[in-house]
Image (tube, helix red, strand yellow):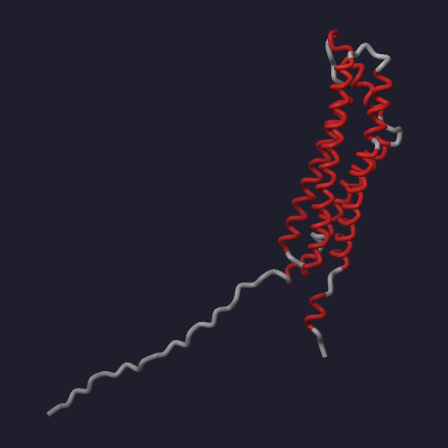
Amino acid sequence: MSYPESTAARRPAVVLLATAVLLVMAVGALAYTVVDLAVLGRTVDAFRTAARDTSASPQQIDDVVTLLRASAAVSAVVAALSALVLAGLALSLPAGRNGVRVATWVVCGLGLLAGCCSVAVLVGERAAPLRLGADERATAELLGLIGDAYPSWWIPLNAGLSVGQGLGYLVVATLLALPAANAWFGRHRPTAPVVPSAPVSYTPLTLPTIRLV
C-alpha cells in the first residue's frame, strides 16, 4: 500500500540543510547588528580621547564622529535587513515553491557580489592609501585613528563574518542546485490544467437519390 501524499511531502536533506544555513546566517547578521551598535559608544569615546593629541579642531573631530556614527548606523540597518530577508527565505523554502528558490539564488548572488566588492575596496585602500594635501594633515591624522578606536577583536570579527557569509551564500546556492533539490522543487511546480475537449459529432452525409422513370 503506497502513500503518495506522504512521500511527496518529504523534503530532501539538501533543502533542509540549505534552510538551516540560511537561519544561521540570519542569526549571524542579527548578532552583528547588536554588536555593531553596542561598541559604537566605546569606539567614539576612544576616538575622541586619541584625537585630543592631534592638530585637528573640535569641529573636525565632531565631523569624523558623525561619520563614524553614520557608518555604524548604515551597517546596522543593512545587517538587520539582511537578517530579515534570510529568515524569510529560510522559512519559505520548505514550502517547495520554485519562485522562492529563484529568489534565494538572486539573494546569494547579490551577497557574493557585495562581499567581493568589499574585499576589492579593502585591497584597493591597502594598495593605494588615501593621500591628502599638507593642508589636510589634521583630517589624515583623524582618519588614521579610526581603526585603532575600535576594539582589537572588531576587525578580525568583521573579517570572519564576511568570509562566513560569503561561504554560506555559496553553499546555499550549490545545495539548491543539486539534483535532489531540482526533483523536489520541480514536483511542486504548478501545471497547466487540462481542459477536456468537447466531443465532436459527425453528421452523416446523405446524397439525394435519383429515380429513373
